[in-house]
Image (cartoon, rainbow, N blue to C red; front, side, top):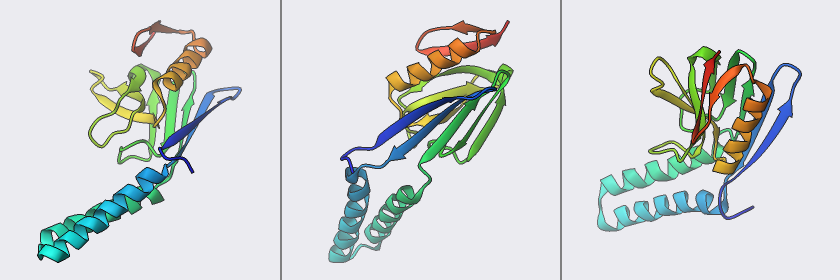
Length: 170
């Protein structure tokens, strides 16, 4: 087991699609730090007699255990006219995503944000304001290799390169 969380990315070229699989292995620091801090806050709450601290310690320790038990595999499948993602979609309450390519505004790596991991994101919707992490915990280099493979396989789309890859039909 490694100290930090690692993500292993695999690509399968299927006859009708590109399939990307990410398997995350939580590092021992992440696995140990959350419950340890939760227990410390519980003990502090007991020591000074504050029920609020005990409650926050229980929530913190429970949240860490929940994250440990979560599914750690994500599948992102790109077809010619649609894309699918299912599994652990990094912080999203949804477990799966299905979009037609005209709905996709851009695909690219992001550092994430509050309650969202770093990884490959898809921005979609009328103004491209909705986003979901389809491959969580991958590096910027891994995300670039994914977008390059998509560009190479599906050349029917007008591609605008940059930090984010914008797609349009035409």
